[in-house]
Image (tube, rainbow, N blue to C red; front, side, top):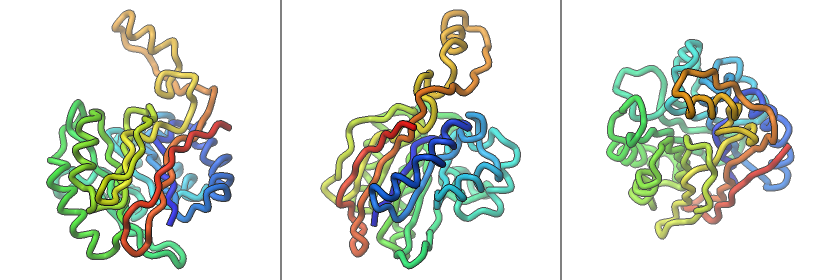
Length: 260
């Protein structure tokens, strides 16, 4: 099975990249499943039901999120009604939504997707991702050996430690949040594919997807600025992970960075 994970989609340029590039990537890589982090897809802040539906129409099978989950009030509708939409697993009990889901797509074997948020340098501080993710992985593996994890976190050390803990328990751990694609793709000894950060899908002539000048002004003056989504050099970034259907172990991981 080949899974494409799309790094943080930023605003309308990021959505356009998915619309225009995903069909080509499906053909080029023989993709079976597409997972995308959509927490910045609504103008760079959060996500709405309409935008989620747009991404599903483009061919995305599941949407993960992170610390910008609550930026749009309409997200409650997704949390309550859409099983293909995930929020971080480690929110306190009783929080609307779900931190994992099991996808049943066409004649493919079931695929589990888990969304977890780190704690180092992250707000709000959530429950311990290490203990909760390990418990969730043990539950999910009773239903399918194929488990894909989006770990939304800032610190590289936390991401690596988290993935090392899950080595052999899940098929892949790919990091999001920093919007900077790393070059450390690998398969751990237990068969878990790993990439510290998938990068982001959107305008790269920018500061992490935002117009450059307001960010510079903020750094120089410490005064509030409006960080509008940039427009130019639009890329789709992420990773393709090939997984053995029977064992759930990763066979290959390949970074993706395609320009419109």
